[in-house]
Amino acid sequence: MLTTAPRGTKDIMPADVKAWRYLEETMRRICAQYGYKEIRTPVFEHTELFLRGIGETTDVVEKEMYTFNDRGNRSITLRPENTASAVRAYIEHKLYAEPAPAKLFYIGPMFRYDRPQAGRYRQFHQFGVEALGVQGPNIDAEIILLAVQILQSLGLKDLKLKINSVGCPKCRPLHREKLQEFFKPHFAELCKDCQSRYDRNPLRLLDCKNPHCQELGTGAPSLEECLCDECKDHFAGLKQLLTAAGIEYEVDHNLVRGLDYYTKTAFEIQYQPLGAQSAVCGGGRYDGLIEEVGGPATPGIGFAMGMERVLLALESQNLLPDSEEFMDVFAVCPKQEYFPAVFKAVIELRRAGLKAEFDFQGRSMKAQMKQANKVNARHVLIFGEDEFARGQVVLRNMSTSEQKEIAITDIITNLQTEV
Ligand code: HAM
Image: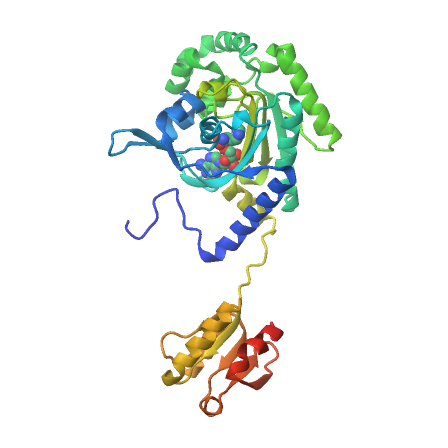
């Protein structure tokens, strides 16, 4: 146990980090194009924030939070998502006093006590975006376009964008009633969770993972029939903008998101080959959340992408960048008494901005040359006995095998012209 990472977590080893950085850099670059600024919130928050924000009847809050009392007896939760924290920070730092929208993005680890499988982890990473302070479908369209542009610029194909409107507090009560009527004759067959959600939040019944509950939910009244005029117009406006932008989408009236704060627009981007974990991105509008958390009534919309899932999709389409690493120079020191000179040369090379390494263990010249190959050194500097006596070293170009003698004092100028 001591030598394995906890279930549902994994190490991101040096060989994988390049792909992560490529993904993060793409996200940051495109966020800058759209004017979104990075925010970094704490990985833990007061439990109350998530209870209020995400909703007490959701799987995330009921089953998946890492919650504990700290030594000061405060209930603390490792963030299962970042929207509630971004909203808390928005209120705490009074970003509502600045011109709207506040455009924020984040990248970081989230924690959910989920059943681990491919694409589903207990510690996973999200890239997410939030735009706070504006009504109307224009910002919804911009947010969706941003998500699509990121995935497209990574080269990903076969993605499906699904959109829905989940209504607002004006039209949802009617849907709620209809749902209760629909499920009432089957109440006894529902799972325990669904039975307890029947009164509290019947919409959650459509989101249950239990196969029998899912079966019972087929043909359930759609929210679409109950949408108020404002929600209908908002949804129509969004569809029009997406069409104008040439973005393909599918309207899916069964798209129910796993968190309670959504109003009006909800969307997901799916990559079907990931199977049960096909959602690489999910988001929507949350017009009541900021007020719920204690701020002024302010609308908001955002999304989050599962970084691990995007990476799995990239891997399956062979789109990950080549991960070749190299060193500019490896200094070979055949005699320990020359080591101070080697050390000095390497330090100077690094100060000059070059990637330079040497052997720490006084190994044979052959072993050091092997090490130079292993670290993919473009050049090798050999501090040979004869040359060293003349204040010279051998500079070898590893790809052409050409070598020349140069003065120790000229190492940097020589290498700077070579690399
Ligand atoms: P979510 O749908 O719960 O939404 O998560 C967003 C994405 O995070 C999912 O589509 C998936 O790619 C990834 N994800 C979720 N759980 C896991 C897991 N256990 N392992 C790996 N990946 C996972 C939210 O979190 C909202 N905060 C999104 C949002 C932002 N809505 C508005 N603004």
